[in-house]
Length: 171
Image 1 (cartoon, rainbow, N blue to C red):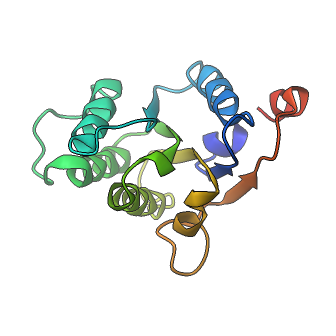
Image 2 (cartoon, rainbow, N blue to C red):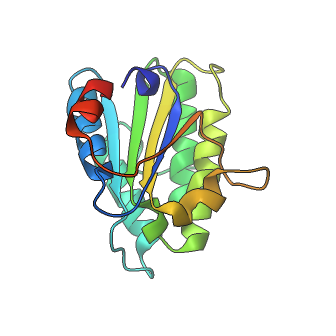
């Protein structure tokens, strides 16, 4: 939790059923007590035809401070550019919790990670800060690890099985 509050990015990888959802639920529970903006994106079983519209809708619903009409562009990229602009001018912390990113179509997952990379690259350039927790299976690894990846997290953890006491202690 402290790493997310400090504007760090964390990737949790592991097979289904090992506790990634429990970790993200606990993070959301704790972060909503102290943060104005905790944006939860569930990528479980999107309709690939409208997936970006659904993501934009989810973000805007959870961040009503964003304007309804953006001059920065439309869709996912424009919305995330608007968040960047919002962070540059407001002293807020925004934490994104993204579950099952690898359930998205590959092109959408790439665009989302590239946009997160751009938000992360602000690195204190604005007033606000940005934290990110992403979960997925091992299929997500090429997108978040290595020289050609779309996004390199500050921390990457591979979960093999759920040890409830350990994860509660880490959260």
